[in-house]
Image (tube, rainbow, N blue to C red):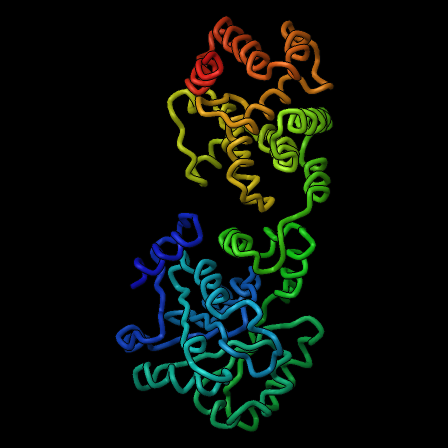
Length: 424
């Protein structure tokens, strides 16, 4: 069931996420819980799940040594209005992506599949019915929830059925939390434990705010969760053009950023002249060199991590991969999904045999942008650029091939294919 579900999820997301061999409790696997003698449950809306949720699960595992930590996304929360704005299914799948490569973490959809409002007591009863007699069940809660726990549905039965683990929350001091735990334990027995760990400052609210403002979320949530949310526009669209431009100014060296501005200016003019989509040309120009200044080791690591195939030439001349890496970075880091833009970024340094007008615009703008230092065919290419784009590109690609050959460097086959296509 795990493999078939994950294959379907990866296929729908358009990505092959490396999720290892984690277990997934789908809510009806009695045999699975029949073998589970200690289970820690981390419940929540998970809209979306973030690194703080994962840190809590790991801290619980280290301190209490449960056989499994089970994340349970709630279906219809009784205490939150509009929490189903992102469907329960999306929240479940993001939780699955965040946890599936951890061997001790599992995910249950029992609350999602249960009709009506979700109450903790219903989940605990269900899990106790699946676990063997005498199994220890721990339910993880925020220290803030201690204040309302006696108002929960069937609270006294709940406190008899399972243990609770209280984790620190901002605004709730350690002394106050421990005093509240002691008061409840005096009444119900030793049912509640305090997990002494750093307070989690991350919140799903902050993640959603950053998404909506086009700000970086990578430090708050796993990459797979970010990609899933961006692909479905769950929390707002990608960053604006000006926001990406500002981010690139911080990311690139001053010289590279000036070059990028030059390519952007020239691509805008060329696109208007030749009838290409101006907005697509501007995005491709802005991001074409976003991975140019990565180190050799980082480029190799990203190719391996992102599944970018290296032929023999690219493996020996790793800088040739800054186009493919840049295209993948544009998609992953800046939310660009347009295939024409991504293709133009991917092939801007080599060209290819099936170039579109947009591809040609970006390559030519890269050759002749106004801040380029002079080189032999630059004046000729600029003179041809707005009368015969194909001829201008032939001049540029032939020059590049000649320079690389004289330097003893191999020339990528895509460049020969591009030149051949331009001659037709």
